[in-house]
Image (tube, rainbow, N blue to C red; front, side, top):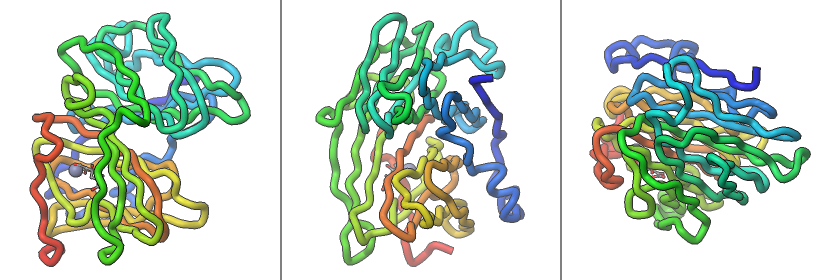
Length: 280
Ligand SMILES: O=C[C@H](O)[C@@H](O)CC(=O)C(=O)O
Ligand SMILES: [Zn+2]
């Protein structure tokens, strides 16, 4: 089998209060991404958001309609965002080929029937990170190159949170139904992302941590602002953030992550910030 998928149901904040380490990881951590010659998909019941990966080597990988979709093809009622964090590769959408270099992205609108992933070099493959959400309108496909993104500098060295945020798939860059995706890279010496932390009860979010050096880790914080829990994460691992949860991490080194969101609105700045001194 080249496509592997699993389902994650939604947990309530009340329920999560009593989760132990193992259950917290089972419900929220995604630790099986970026496997060669496989498409891995995790279907979350928070906003029916799918996170996954495709790592083609010698042969192309086809995006198949997994059973939970009950659809003839994957994008029958969905839109898709892809960011390549590996070497050069290509995504073929109904016969049109989009070459994606390292850190380039592609938005694919609803209604496209055949999507395949390939790598330029089998020994140095592309690493495609995938997010998909339900869609009700067919917007055009669009490649987002490194010069098309909106760049914001955030934080400061003094507060250990200096970082560069790149917005790839937001509605000021590309027309979307509900998907938003971007990438944040910590400056050397800084460790905290998304601090001050926030929630947006209108949207869920998934963080995919990468460029975490070997033997280092990121401690990701989740939960309601006054009831936080943590999950230790390694390179190429993702974590599901419920709409009611903060999502903020501190690494034992600098690192990057891709954030993806879906839900009620498309307003990137719509966040309820939690005061740092009031976190519990
Ligand atoms: O709702 C937006 C998301 O949590 C991220 O874009 C935040 C982030 O990348 C950061 O502050 O480092
Ligand atoms: Zn957020």
